[in-house]
Length: 261
Image (cartoon, rainbow, N blue to C red; front, side, top):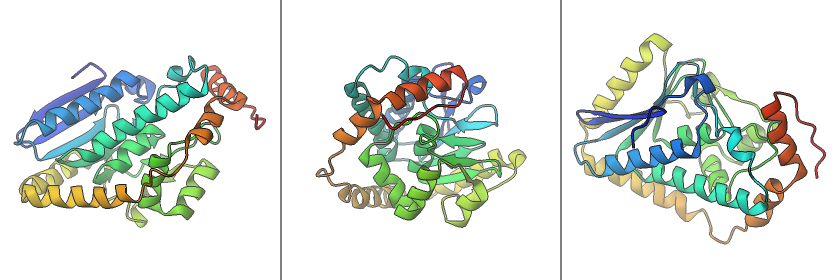
């Protein structure tokens, strides 16, 4: 599914998904997330594709998160649980794609955008890139247990708490220092840097690439215990007065007034 908001193209052994909604800082609608999933299906169906690049138009934001308007119709805890299950499935599909994935990050990668960038195998960024899930100061919701686990795998529990409790956005230089960013380049050079990296990866043994990706994924997945109970926590956040206030405040462009209820 290539739409005007999510473009898909293949050149040789490299496929590219371009999130194309720069006027909204590339905020994702549910249909746009589905287009990313469709791109993964197309990549897996084409053995000639060795690399999948996820990037965004405009140069100011990678993906600023889910379009907040999607939350304005939520009326119950079940809506929140269904959304988190859907986001889990989307992130999981990108994590499972056979090709090597590169996130080409310019500007903010927040919320769902942060998850998309972090679940990619490699990240090439400009100095203006920033990463985070700032829901503690915006919407008052939370992530699923699986997505907290993904963040813990990359950052460790201490950094996850720092990032989410302070609701800050981690600068690219800090992300590079802790190994999250694989290449840090100036904006005029990022396309070439990603192309060079993709060319190198595409020339390597496909089965070795797949084995490395898949076994690392399986090891990480084995630590995401199905015994972790999450519905009560997610339901409490999404059915709260604070969540409704966070959505209303965001859409009204005013600071939220959280009460803990």
